Length: 299
Image (tube, helix red, strand yellow):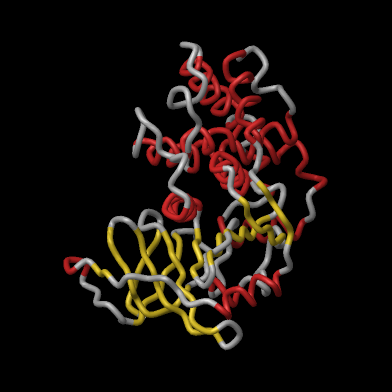
């Protein structure tokens, strides 16, 4: 079953996933989606999940890069995205990249071009994340100093001569850190890699990995794939969670404007969450989320 990535070109988290697919040398289908709004052509698959990207494998839909990375790894184990010596520690590094560093990099990248970005984009981000144009501009003096420090840490790490973040082969940790460098460079060029030779050389090596083998399809074609497929889900709900398999639940991120996704609980553990949704357009789909950063509540 093909990987289908629903993404847009300038999305930094999508770049993380595209690099991960490149590490795998994977062949994958690309569906370009809007960079804001409700994404009506994607909603039959996700139930309204707002963030980007989303990975589709048949009728299994993976939301959030953490769930996406695990799905890619499970369906295409070699070469691993969790090489030794880091192994699962890559998740911790990716959590730092996608957490405190991501916000600083977003402001650093977007503030200089804030007036060229449509107000609709800022309104969308303010509604979803509580992060609008005024907040970006307010942090434009301080947050680049955080990026400078974070990038200096990465440069120091790489200054021992290692080829990639975890050693001699690339993996998830490096893809997550690279998305930050890539995002800032879209508007700042080499301003934050200048004077950091190990960082700059490493970023060039990661960029050279590429995105694997990409081909474009339409949203309608992706929906047809889901309609023709059956979700591949093993029911497993942690007995200590207080929930039961088949229970109607809601899942949402911790963002203030996140949409609530409703479905029947199929899987719940520290490894992740899966709900089954019945959609009039595509039939039954399984929507997968990471456990970290998601709220599960009885519907």
